[in-house]
Length: 215
Ligand code: AP5
Image (cartoon, rainbow, N blue to C red; front, side):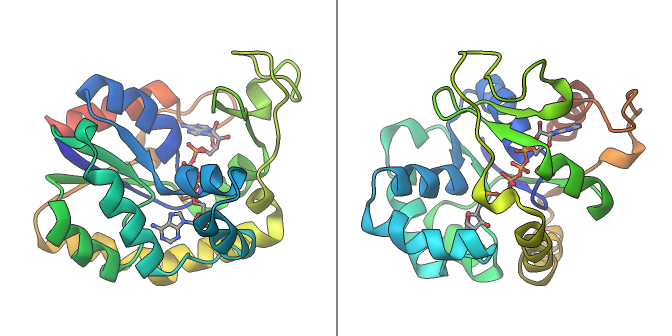
């Protein structure tokens, strides 16, 4: 299956992509993770992407499309893919349609007011790539899976988050209409799911809702 996860920063695309990709047996391809890995390795793409990412802006379409095209040509994508964070503009979606069009697009809908606390509280492990929220950590500096030191992403500071949300609404949300028009959109309304003690939806309920939407 060829699948896209669409949603604002903090919607839980990365959180859900891990389980859904292994359930479907397709690789999880996150363009944000690819840029962060490129930056860690100090490649020209990583260095170019950094100034856009730090400002909460989109990396130019030509750079992202070339990177994704190369990745989708790898053998593990022969049976499909789960793209997380791509496409983010109508131009990227049109380019993907020419490379290898998706079968379905899952939109994870979360209202803006929930996203700020999710993102400011997010911690990431550089070793196992796990993503956590401080509310679920006994020690917010240590990875509960592998014990490495957790860090906060540069773009998870409040000022950058507001710009990322604006960029999402201005440049990425038109993709909802684009894929609706193609009959490929599956919307997950997380506000309709039961809430936990912290007042947010449970990750396992979102996972089940995604699988149901894909049946
Ligand atoms: P990217 O890394 O893709 O960031 P993003 O889209 O902003 O998405 P996030 O990773 O912030 O959120 P997520 O939806 O994955 O949420 P998560 O699961 O972590 O992109 C970064 C940058 O790279 C962009 O700004 C841009 O500059 C560049 N870029 C990337 N792709 C590009 C492209 N195609 N074109 C141009 N530029 C591009 O969850 C968030 C938090 O919420 C976590 O703490 C998690 O534990 C918690 N959480 C998750 N689910 C729940 C739940 N159900 N209840 C409570 N908490 C939850």
